[in-house]
Length: 151
Image (tube, rainbow, N blue to C red):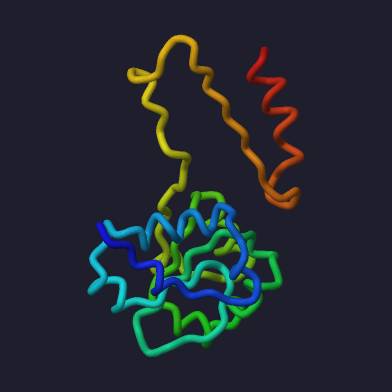
């Protein structure tokens, strides 16, 4: 299967990055979605730079308070975006509250880790999982959550 990585829009902040947003980009442009469809839309992953004449999808991977999202407060600018994609219901709600993003133009596509095939792993294989985020994305909640889970 041939990928469509050449269609990914890069900018000064993501050209050398390999975080969660970039992993999601690689999934979307990895070859499962036909190139002809991807060529018809401009998918903007959190960082709005240049808008072209295609249908525009804003795929949010940041908080609405992030300065990169400030242009979305302008209703005239938001009209230029055809669809808003969020990774959680909480994030969608916050973009609605903080930036005024319309629910009618929004959808949640939850992102997640690739599933671990527990049937195929051997008993000696350990499952290791690390969740790493930036502090402004709720990191302060992890300790109380893990304490509660341990109880």
